[in-house]
Amino acid sequence: MSRMDTTYTVLSEGLEKRFGGVHALRGLDLAVARGTVCGVLGPNGAGKTTAVRVLTTLSAPDGGSARVAGHDIVREAAAVRLAIGVAGQYASVDGELTGRENLRLFAKLLRLRGAAGRARADELLERFGLTEAADRAARTYSGGMRRRLDLASSLLTRPQVLFLDEPTTGLDPGSRGQIWTAVRELADEGTTVLLTTQYLEEADRLADDIVLIDHGRAAHRGTPAELKSLIGSYAEAVLPEDATQPVFLTAAGVLDRLTGAEPVIDREHRTVGAMATGGTLTLPRIVRELDAAGVPVMDASLRPPTLDEVFLRLTGGAGATATAAGTSGPARPVSRTAGEERAA
Amino acid sequence: MSTVAYDSTAVLGRHLRRIRHSPGVVVLTQTMPITMLLFFGFVFGSALATPGQEYRAFLVPGLLAATAAGGIMTGMFQSSQDVQRGVTDRFRTMPMSRIAVPLGQTAADLLTTAIGMVPLVLVGLAVGWRIDGGVPGALGAFGLLLLFRFATNWVGAYLGLLIRNEEIAGQLGSVTFVLPLLSNAYIPTDGLPGWLRVVAEWNPISAVAAAVRDLCGNASPSADAAWPLANPVSSALLWGLVILAVFVPLTVRAYTRSGE
Image (cartoon, each protein chain N blue to C red):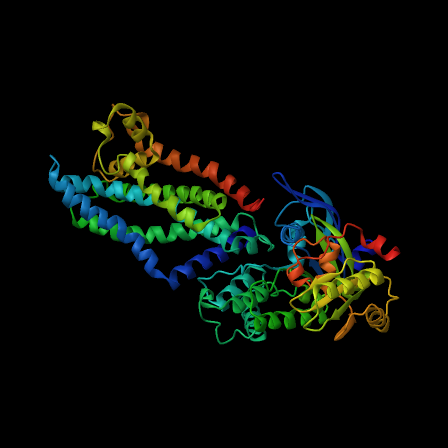
């Protein structure tokens, strides 16, 4: 086994996957270090689910290669299946069976026989707060309970790598928090986790490293902090209630000059903001320049961007839901790559 | 125990457990042919030139064959439901034999059908059907029916893996009720117009129904009919084996490549 294999539990190079005319993966490179949580982030249709399906042997790649837990996903698919746990966006448990029966069935298939399988099932039911509901048909479970049962089903043999495809999509905040806690605990116990999500907050909370994928390839990667620093800080000024359109335009002109980025005016929240790159801009300077231009400033801030803002900038605006743009519409699409931006 | 046997037994256990949770579904499925026997046998039978009792004796093997053909419907529904609900994908990410999921599923169906046919046989005997072929004949007929059920269930399992949607599978399932109508299950094929008679005589359900009638001593094969009906036992056996030989590999392939 080469050094790369022991360092990276998931390692893919140039993965390609086509469905008819759709090129879902176009040379996806991923490297997930042992014992870390990798957040794969991207808009709908970016290729997140396809990536998970290929890496978990559900779908055969059309090109490129990947190793999971040291095994080739095509030639050693059976060995990969022994090493992984998979929990999907859709709870893949048998709704007609009870929670306990589901876990015992999967335990049996994973060769946890007899008392060992029963004990492990009970242990996981307890851990995921399903003991009381254990003998009810899974179809009567709430969305969150089903998702927890699905997660428990993928942990029976303590897999080396856990793949989670949008584990909290559609869940209420309480259930989402429970899944987050569980994933964090697993990571702390040393399980390598690859998680796809559309929720930037989820990646921010859970992931050690983030890979932004867009159009089937990795567009950017780094820690949440690194990704945020790629695009600088967000400068924002709040104007008084009676501020007129010319005043807003003057303020926008000042921010344009200071940041070099196109400002966003939000009349509803009375804000003018722009993304500041380079790291030399300071809050006093913003206030001073606005004041000098005759703009009355009620409040001003210079804060790190949210991952939503990072995402919007780095992927050219496709797919992110929450933006700082407000009523003025989405921010200007950015065609420059992050590398060029950093150099600029 | 080999991997195939172990995994298939576990999947079989899954399906038997499902039945234990909702036995009503199975009971309802078995009620259908009995209802048809009583309805066709007494309502339609009264309008036929042949005495009603004779028609009912003709009808019972036909309904048994139609029940066996119902494997298409149950197989299709179960497979597509598992695909749609993500259960198939969970199995596919596990270190399991690739034949175990469809094999466990069809084996469970075979067991429930074997038990489920008993009430129809009993009601059939009560309304005038007779088994005159002795124990070997009766066992042979039962064996052919189960072979055919097993075979059609694999066809259904295969189609379900392609359909991937339980609503569509349910709709198509009701279309399969037409298949026995295009056979000798409910009516003799002699009076059918030319081309329809050819379709009906080559319909595998006809061979199975005729084989049951032959083995149970209800009617002898008609020598002037098409080959399958002149040699019903051989053709019923052949149909079952050929369908299995084609659809078992197809199903395993579709299962392995599900979602591609």
